[in-house]
Image (spheres, rainbow, N blue to C red):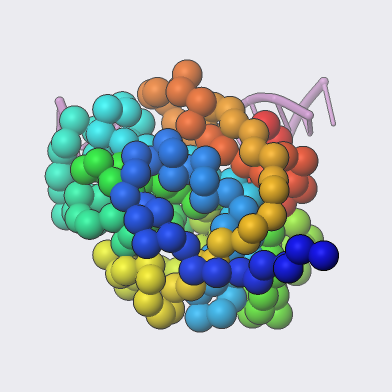
Length: 191
DNA sequence: ATATCGATGCCCT
DNA sequence: GGGCATCGATATG
């Protein structure tokens, strides 16, 4: 019988690729923050060429500075003045992947404390809900992903990945840069 | 089921 | 002043 592989850290150069490639490959990876988190089931890619991106045209501002920093770091920004959104910075300046939904796996009691009495499938469904469940704030902006409080683990499982157009944008709406775990009920919306 | 609205930080014109 | 990588409450079919 073949040995069952346990979760392992991501390959060293995982994030040193373009955002679209990383966006597809990040599905199925486990994200933990202070030990709380789960499997990434939905993500979107953004890059410099993309009119929906904060890094569009190479424009750099105080907010998006992390997007132009080294890969494998967090870009955390405030959305609509109310929510925090978590991204992973990728290779190719100005590229990042927005983490949109998790299948909760660890520390769910903390998630319920932070999110209230929502159905389990809604705990981490949507970028703002996910950061609330994991207590992610702007303090983590620019922090490396290979060190606490972050932990990223790859699984050797075969999974089916679907893609579609991104959510909540008004430009670049035709780009199929939203990725998800097929048939997951933990995504923010169907594909 | 979809539609509208308010919360309100940061970037834009 | 207006728009935005959002969300939940409220109204209405």
